[in-house]
Length: 485
Image (cartoon, rainbow, N blue to C red; front, side, top):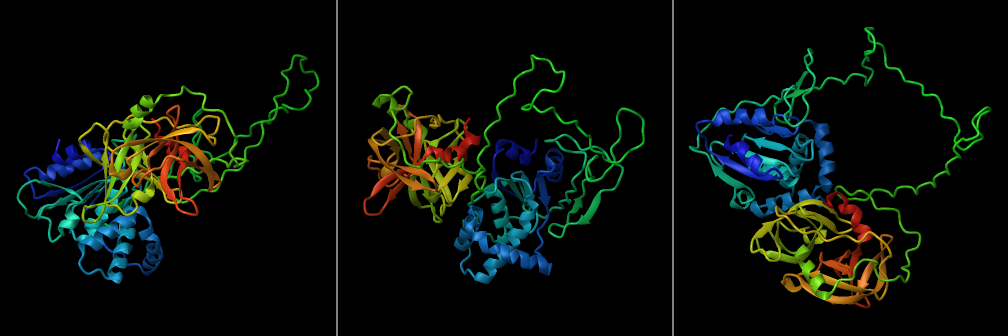
């Protein structure tokens, strides 16, 4: 194995590495990289060309307006502004247009991106952009790092291969019948080589149409007959299940099944990345008085034993200083943590501290929702998740609760209180409770007396009366459903 493939195997989720200089097996190692990873989720380019078409430029100018509002765009521009001494709005807009134009290379959600061309701040920032989107990024710099600033270089790891000298790196041409991560495509005799890409100069490959789709002929597998055009198969209608039996039917006929009630219409999709859509709103938003949860009621010491599932978060700003404190709740054994997006919005890095662990972990943002202030981050560590309350009865006024969070920057304080009311939020009821939380508890766990997560704290609501609130599990449970392992 070469050093390139070793890095990719050791960092399967995400990595951003610069390889400086050339070793003896440089060309062979690149060929091995192409051979092992040269499938549809692998991109290797020897340069990035700026957009030239006028219509394309006009389209990209419109897209550039909302670039800064995206999570990846805000971070890339923040890094650019901190590394370039004189920021010009026109130059910044040209940078955004180039990033949007090159982002067409990143067709899948994740993959391997290898860059080996001329490296300026634009090319480096695009590699950082790909890294933020979840790609494994390798930058090959045979002649050295050039004039990149230290602010930029600290975002990636550095590996020195050998002498800094020019190297002839061949173009990568994807092959149709080589797909190590997926079943190989069928062989075809036709030439499917398309035009040369205007972005990278690489030759695009056109996949042939699949049989039986788009008007292509379908061959009858039951006989050696010539190809015939597509045809639909007519299925005879089923007998009426709810109507009277046909004449001559058996008397022991199964009685008709009752018709199922119609489901409510699905709610419209909301903004955010990967949001699955909220469940239908309850018919009555007014909480009803209900008995305490049916599960086993835990003692204070049992509740305190759950604090290892709540972590402390520190958001680092542009200069590496701590800009905000917060908390997070483990929702999966594989390191997935639920927290509030407002803590991560302007941060460059997120440090995570776990109870009874002296090591500091750096989190990666997996999913977020701006309107509902929710985010899922991940660290490379096994965690003990908290069970999310999804049953009945609903939380009620007067119900005892426990709050676990890193208020005041201290890891995992535990407070006891009761539910004092509810406030409407996007058709759901935020839980208002009496436990006085401190700054830094946002993203902490609100538990019932059975140790189940019934809410996620998001801070204080300042009005006529200051009150501590939490987002109900009915709102965030669909958001994290795919991570509950």
